[in-house]
Structures are given as structure tokens and as C-alpha cells.
Amino acid sequence: MKRIYIKEDVCIGCRLCEVYCLVQHSKSKKIIKAYKGEYPKPISRILVEEKGHLSFALQCRHCEDPPCVEACITSAMYRDPDTGAVLCNDSKCVGCWMCIMVCPFGVIMRGKGGLGVASKCDLCYGEEVPVCVANCPNEALEFR
Image (cartoon, rainbow, N blue to C red; front, side):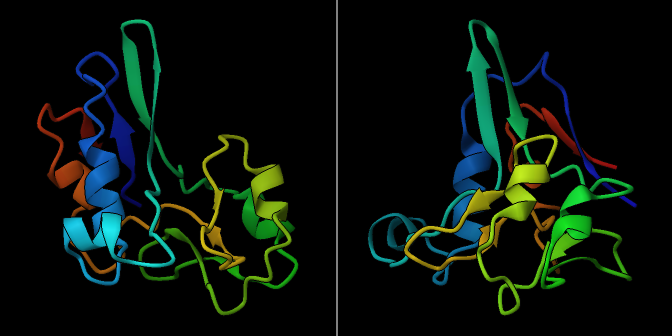
């Protein structure tokens, strides 16, 4: 299965990965509308962490043995049989947040706007390459 890998040594913390992710997961797919015109406001499923001169992007690792899938009480978290990605079925998620509590990387978030569903990287399901990888100006993200 292909995953996103981070090269911390070339990440400059520009956060464009967060912007492209947010827009990709918005209804309009347009940056201004995504940031100022949509409710609930979409959220990025990748986060940039910074400390001093070091910065890097964090997103779901799509674990081989994902604890979020094991902990999910409604089977909303599942592994896609075609891609191998760990995904969340929003219609099944009841917002118990067990996935958030068991994720060893802290990359599953609560959806905003009262959606009550978990939000996590879906590798831009349907896209050949996740938008964060495709638009990283420094090639700090790789999809392999």
C-alpha cells in the first residue's frame, strides 16, 4: 500500500499542505469559499508541527494493524479493500471518539461544525496522488 512519507529536512513549515487538504475536502473545492463561505468549515486532515527550526507534517499513517479500526464501535473506521487506506464512513460514525483516544500518532480529529464525526487523512480518495503531496513546493512529502 502507498503511504505519505515526510522529509523533515526539507519541510519549511509553509503549511500549503494544510491549505490544499482543506480545499480538497471542502464542498466548493475553491479556496475563498472553503475558508470564508462554507459551514461547517472544512478542516485540514494534515497538520504541520513546528519546534524551533524543525517542522514536519503529520497525517494518518494507515497502520498495518490500525487500533482505530479495532476500537471503532460502529465499524465506521475500516480498511478500504482496494487501496488499503484506513477510512472513516461518516454515515456510521457516532462521534464516540474512541479512534481519537487510541490513535498512537494523534492524527484523528473531531469534525467541526457539530458534525460529530471523526476526520482523518483519506489519501484524497479517488485522486492518483494526495493533494498535499502534489502541491508541496519543497517536495517534503512523498507518496510511495
